[in-house]
Image 1 (cartoon, helix red, strand yellow):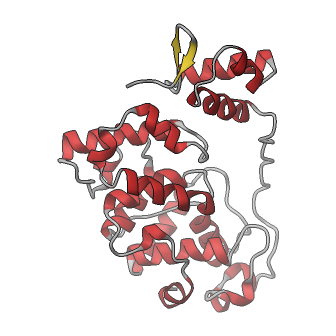
Image 2 (cartoon, rainbow, N blue to C red; image 1 turned 180 degrees about the vertical axis):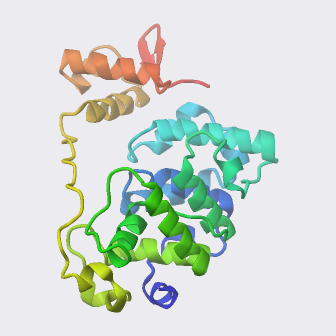
Length: 277
């Protein structure tokens, strides 16, 4: 796996040996529910603007939200900003390496904490994203797919595999294999370094995994409405311009109420604006 990774890994900018733990933390926030191709230019711009946690901690939240536009799920921007402030206040501006400390930061769950610990500090953390879970399920479990929720059996198997191998480097390699070769819909088994030992391939590629849940359409959804309205507010729109940005009254009001509740916009005398703190 490691040899395959060294030859086939994509040259993602946050994989550069000179990237700081802060840069890797930012990449993990951005990669939550967002495709790599969309993250790359945003990450590069972000790191030029705020190369350390201290830089971001001092930035106005409205500026942070504007910079985040295009990545979706803007609450991640607020949590990343709050994380930067905590890193400055509690760890003198340095990203902590321990998973327990990382888990105390806003917006960081078990996967993100393990990924930062592994990829920023080389710790043998059990990193379990969708790609890694799928590769392990197929190669070691003979299952086509994984359930929507991580199971204890999956975690135990992954822990044993990480312990037997070279930890963080192995996790990065398996993640890349799942992204490039052992994909969900069209796996390229003839290009897989695990083909000779893959339990799923040996069984004839049975479609024996749990049924995939149908993803709701983004077009016309409340999530799209929130994104459109947040962008309009960030551009200074108010009154009739806000109404024109999303014509459905009921959905617009619901989306604006959600943005207010999440702290992504604030009420002003003129209507709405990005928050100031």
